[in-house]
Image (cartoon, rainbow, N blue to C red; front, side, top):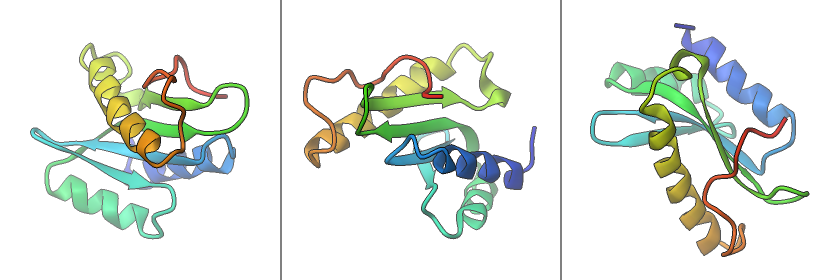
Length: 120
């Protein structure tokens, strides 16, 4: 598994590509999920704190509001890409993100909660 600095650098690289309005690292716990957003100035400290509490970085979720393919996108980190459960887990996260984005007027009501693939 990569170290926390490398994972936070991957998060920063996703935002640097300017495809997303916002993008976050998904950190899973047994009974909950937390997020480390790209805008978090202390993202490395936050991730290390969440991992110290038993969290595991699982994947990324991002919101695209402009262009041809607006919607919510998610992908697992390389460490979890082959695990059977991760896709269903990220679908649930996308459902939550979509509800919040719709409520804030950032995403049209008729868009699917999770768009296929990852914008590249």
